[in-house]
Length: 319
Image 1 (cartoon, rainbow, N blue to C red):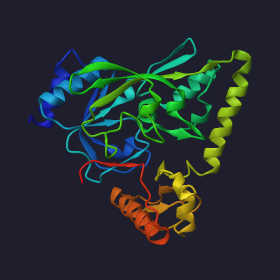
Image 2 (image 1 turned 90 degrees about the horizontal axis):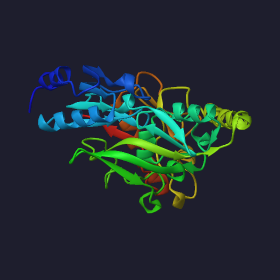
Image 3 (image 1 turned 60 degrees about the vertical axis):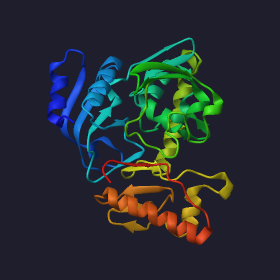
């Protein structure tokens, strides 16, 4: 295995890479939870060929990698990572045609929704205010106000990390479920050494014409307002911590609330007093604080109700 600095130098001297390369990048600034140590090597490819070059170089040098989108659903270890972080934010173009919106995986969902609004394209209003990127939303099959990404998905493209080829994917409803996608590895959610790296997402929309632009804007404001009223933006967080399980008969947040856990704190992490399914970084929380609080919630809810909550946030980095 080459040293991190030797690997980084290959990006600086090679004409096949466009983008940004940095050493010892603090990850707290790249996640909505605002926690985590550093990435020894941080790479932001500006296009798909540069992403493929990145994957090839890291493979040749036996450097493990982690795929980072908007950082809105992850908790990075206090010790950071032991290899490279590949940030998809540079692959972020957005175009439209024939009722479809095509965006790079690194395009923020807020930018995708803003683009649709500006062009009077309806269909993605429920995702207004959603943090994270299009690729991350696809990976998690994000669900907002009763609509899942798979409900509006047409197709996608990804790079196969084994062959380094770009592969087209067309929606097959059988591949998808509640907050599950075919891009998640079986068994657990992980972006460490991912085999399929999403590069492009195509959404289905309806062109309403310029006269309907104000109605689209009003719908977006409504959903953003609901997020604000639910306290999504009061403190750093990763949104919903646990998946809902309909067999439990109520949302996870209500179960946690009824267990008397709202407001409970460990270190700088707190279960939001106003929403049981949010953990907030209230006072310089660490990854260890958040993980301990998640485990406490799981064990307490199990003891009081018999239900086993399933986290949807992803803990990543050095254990």
